[in-house]
Image (cartoon, rainbow, N blue to C red; front, top):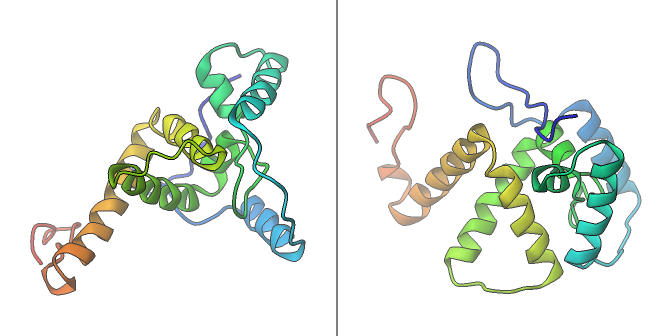
Amino acid sequence: MSFAPLFRFEPSSSELTLRPSDAADAVASKRQASATGSQVKRGDVVRAEARARALQKGGMSGEFVLAESEVQFGLYRGQTFQWLLGNAVGYAVSILASHQMEREGGDTSKSPLMENKDALASYGGLFPPMVTAVARRRLCEGSAFSRGLDDALVGFGVHSHRT
C-alpha cells in the first residue's frame, strides 16, 4: 500500500491534470443531487477513523493516516485525501491555495473545518507536483489582484517572463 495518490499528468508534460476524473464527476453529481447538511467531524474523530483505515490497509505512518483522512467539506466530502488528489486535483489546488492565503492573512482559527484543511495542506505538501500546482495557482491569483491583468506575467512558453 502506498500513501501517495495516483496523480494524472497532462500528455507529454510534467504538469498535473487539473480536470476532475470521471469518478470525481460522478461523486460531484451525486453530491449536488442530494443536498446533505451533515456536521463537520472534529479533527480527533477524523484522525481516529483514518488511523483505523490505514491500519486495516497495512499502513502505520502519519503519511498513511493523512492519506486516509476524509474531506469534511464541499463536493467531495467523505472522500479520502488520497482519493481527492488522484481524482479532483484542480479542486484540491484551489482549496489549498485559498487556505494558504487565509492562514497567511492571519486566520488562526482552530475550527474542525480549518483543522481539516490544515491536514489536507500537510498531505498535499508531501508531493512536489502539488506544491508546484498550488504555488502556480497562487502566483496567478496574486498577479491578477496585486498588479492588474495588464501587468500579469504570461508564465509559460518562450514569453513566460513577459506581461
